[in-house]
Length: 212
Image (cartoon, rainbow, N blue to C red):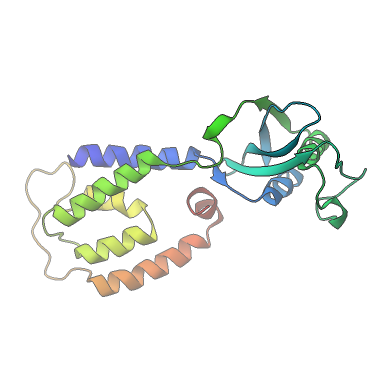
């Protein structure tokens, strides 16, 4: 059972880093200008139409997606800039294509369908739920109390993987490990979780891959 949970947590973490995260459209414009976008994928749309659609992009960090407004009647002014207030209400699709062309970014057109815009990481959620059930219904942990493990996992989901490997005995070890005289309590676990969450939020790589 633990082996399945460990493998599911690893697979879920990999899936999470590859699942597009929702970002504001301005993030796409800024990433293009910074040279951080390699490919843009947009939905194929009929000519002379208007409405809302979806765009996805790949870059240096986790893939991302956003929505944009398009209308063939509201073209952006020639020579527009991202921070130019005159582009408010302009055709954002045309703006994306124009900026991508100027920056040499590849643009692909295909039918994104319903998969874009509401990516739900089901596999990761199931793996985390299984680890939570193991924490609740499993034997007494030896390194930290159940509440301490819970708060640490709330701060950073990778804690579930650490818990599944270490508790109640090291994964793969047949002989049970002796109980420790002192364990991390729930209160100290909560405080440590706050510190860890703050530190991880300050790391750009972690923030881009797991917090957005």
